[in-house]
Length: 113
Length: 110
Image (cartoon, rainbow over all chains, first blue to last red; front, side, top):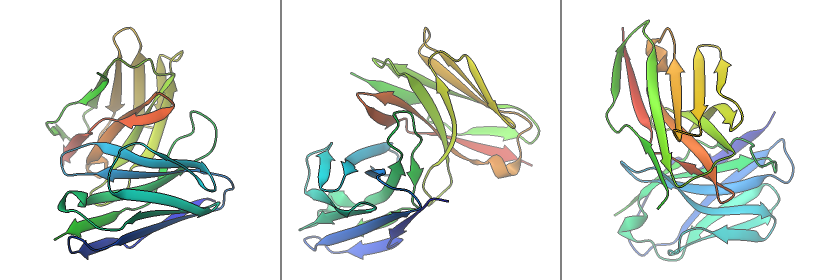
């Protein structure tokens, strides 16, 4: 069966510090991978998605970036965090078919202080 | 602009009753619509998918309807249980992306 791992579960970082969140998927090949952010009282906002190694599409301009160095690894990064980067970050995968559901990790709660 | 609207007020319901949630959308022509459940501090979990040519879909105590004329989906939990307490999100396809509503919290009172 397929599983998705996301870490760390919680993170407190000072403003201006770098960020690296990692997500890995097991049990499937060539998944579509996604990074979402969920701020308090707001819906899920799609940040990045990837349909293959090295292929990243950005949905929202910001100081975050994403990379996919391996087929089942997706990394969210920032060189300098802002207060507004605080939120709940969720990684997800889906198969390549159009109506495939998303399978989410358990998220990272990021607090920028 | 495109909108997906779910009731921001929590739905408090007595155990055993049917909970009904609404998802309305504007300026989308989705080929399908999905419903997810999210527990506090966890990622959403997929529940049901309904396609535009389907009127109704059922899974155990869950039922989803999809009315493309009204641009609305209804999500029903029959014989609700305290374990059904969670936030339920609708999501629909638009521009080859899955866009989510903000979710509607359900509290089932024993």
